Image (cartoon, rainbow, N blue to C red):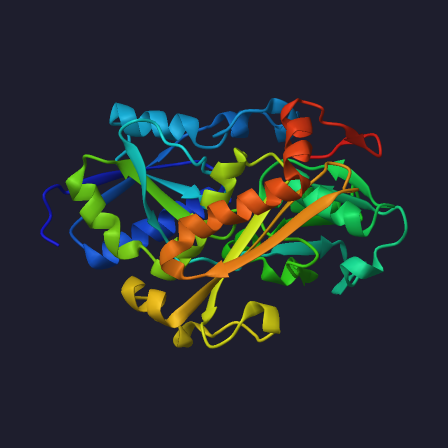
Length: 355
């Protein structure tokens, strides 16, 4: 594209993962526009500052994006790079989610301690009775406890390297992290096992990178448009529509995971998902050649109650399908669970706040 300006500022958090994501976006933009100058504006968010309190207890939404959005509105950044699982469903006036980039592995990773070159525990199923598992997510803790109520869920906050260090220090028998972040930082060898969605359904937007910018900034909107990945965008927007209908934030026990498969197969049939090459990345072709499959759940903090639902349909109806999924979850009993959580009745599990 013909450049109208030579300098662009990207707003980002300062963690290793956030910087990896911002630098990846920067490198992709420079490939397309080599004459562009791009700078990073590292911004500390509320979620970065509060490390000694579980996010579920802090409450509110946008804990990792609010200050970055203020920088966009103030002209201190031209675009913001976010982990999609941190992005609220509503945006300040004048800002919007312009691009969703290609998704990494959306699943959760089970990571146990390492002795020499061997894992202490080889899989989630092999965790001994009463084992201590570190996670900062209500979504993860409620699902793990529904399968293994004997586990002790312990509070775990901090960046990925901090969490791995705490594991290596022996504070936990195992920890659960987003596989995407671990892989992006080059630590895939630390992953003991990838947890399939039937054990731990991923967070809304997990594994995807989003780019937010000012609605009225035509130059930036055109600049970043080529980074949008149609397949990922359809899936993530379906998941986020479900989240919005449930009025959920990133710190409540809600999960949704969408995927596109060939419409000659049904997810219910148990057929494997189509390979990337089988699904056209052009949005208009996707709607004709793929089926959008969406699974969701809402769980109690203790894990004693899990409400699940499944919908599938045309990708062009992605947001409607997300809303349909949420409505079905609510009709099955999710409303009562969410009312309890939103009512600040964040109970302790095994003496720890489950977050």
